[in-house]
Length: 147
Image (cartoon, rainbow, N blue to C red):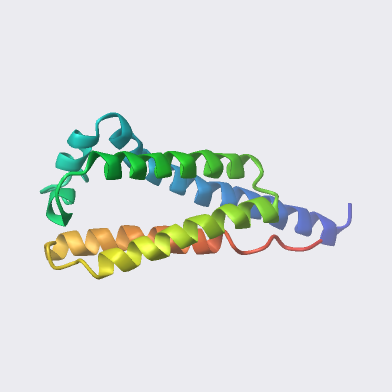
């Protein structure tokens, strides 16, 4: 195998591994919300498990809304896990990345408009988390290097 071809294969393998790590972080993000489907009121009253709960400040408890949100995260976890399996497929990974990016951008916009009820530390934590998820999603849109 030529040096150029070996380098191309290594870059491609690196890209697949990088994609799997990025996708894995998004699957991990879903896990913090899946339990909301099975214990919606407890999730609402305690999320995110640091300091004071955040959800109670955003409006009254709504079981339908909480369980729908949890179902969305479960669906995202399923397609994102599948993308980890097919991380070498630009089409599959960019489609999943596009879905995540759409969700993350609008989720971030909502929270940017509703920061007043959070402490400074909570604002930093929330915006860091949501911005990181948005950047990870955007990174999934990068195509694989061509051979």
